[in-house]
Amino acid sequence: MLITDILFNCEWSQKVVAITVIAILFILAIILSLICKALIYRKSNVKVTVVMALIAILLSVVSVAPLFYMPQSILIDSKKIIINRLIGQKQIQIKDIDLIEQYSSKNTSVRIFASGGLFGYIGYFKSEGLLYKMLVLNESQMVLIKTNSENIVLSCKKRDSFIKIIKELKVKLQK
Image (cartoon, rainbow, N blue to C red; front, side, top):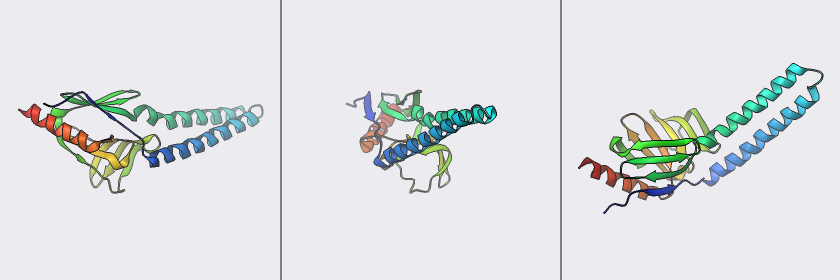
């Protein structure tokens, strides 16, 4: 008997942790510099102060955005994969999956619109002619899922078990 409603955790790789820590420290340094300069120029040049404040706010928002889309966990139920994120869920119907397999981009991925390590690899990438949405926190545990409408690369702990369960559910749903 096949067990469903299985939760897979998404864990950060050491590389993602390092990139995130370094990037946040760098971004904080820039924001603090902008704030200090805005305080210096606040009386002499109001326009410069406003521009610096807007840049600091924009930089803060853009920097934190991937955090809301990064996967927290992945749940498999009998009919779908549910990717839990801070800003809602992403669902993939198992019946729509054409292919699921281990994935390695061989470091040839090109970011189209994405975060390249800050809070994970989140967004749209292209590699070897394949355009895909990536929701990856650990690049050594990547899974490629091709459906009739999109390609998704994600990562989770126990990747091989994840793939095996999805393949078994796919066969069960085709009966």
